[in-house]
Length: 320
Image (cartoon, rainbow, N blue to C red; front, side, top):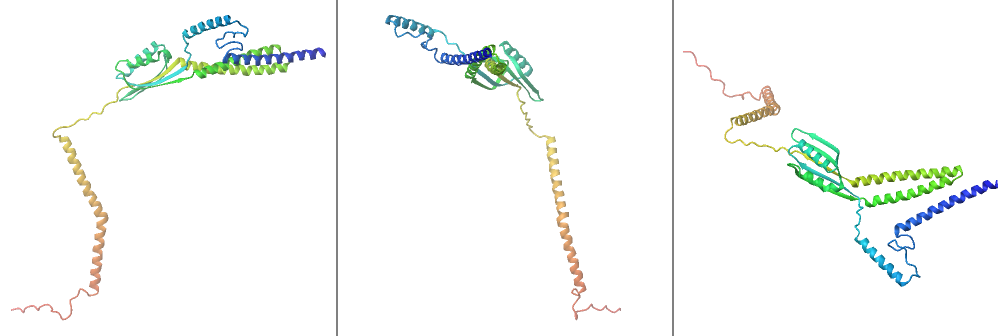
């Protein structure tokens, strides 16, 4: 029983020691990233002790001064990550021929076609090609499209987005997770209890999943920065409207004009007949009907008879 307790105590102490080691490693790594380990100057050299002689101090100062000059003369490595994108609209007289030349030009620069679309209409044809180009050949690709035969650039838009901070941040997180992964592997190798092993295994799986996820994001960003994206829209010229102006007398045009006038007169007469039949004819019929009724009523009442005592008709002359 005492031996079992002793083994458990040793296992617990080893686990605590490993966690303490992880914390110490994390702290030292932070110090090294910020300004170097304690006891070193900003150039990474051991700091001179307080008991050092003045001659040694001056010698060290001279050596560090010469080294700093060498560091200043050394070229600075460019580690910037910039995502470049652009859209170009061009007008070409022959679409298919120009597309073949554009593909050949971009392929010669180390790029490739990521997508394409083409629409052929009766009057005008249009095609859109999306190229992925090495970032170092970006300007060469733009010049290659401009220099194609009979190409007229209508519009060009470019955009640059720096993602250096995102890539470096992902790299730092990946390094920290890998350090944690190594420590967890050490803990798992020393663990005795099954519960401890399972707990460490769960934590290790989580850390490894985060490493894979962040590594994928970092690789995607680096690929976006390594290969620029250029979308080129090719189109044939729009057809121009042709207007023909007739000079002098045109019999066909005069005939059309006369027919139009005749149709206009016929439409006017038809309109007048419709109005007369619908509006004026009922009115006239009503007026005539009223006049007949008044005349008939007046005859029945004797208003139209001759007055009494008036001269009657003359008698006929006697026969000889």
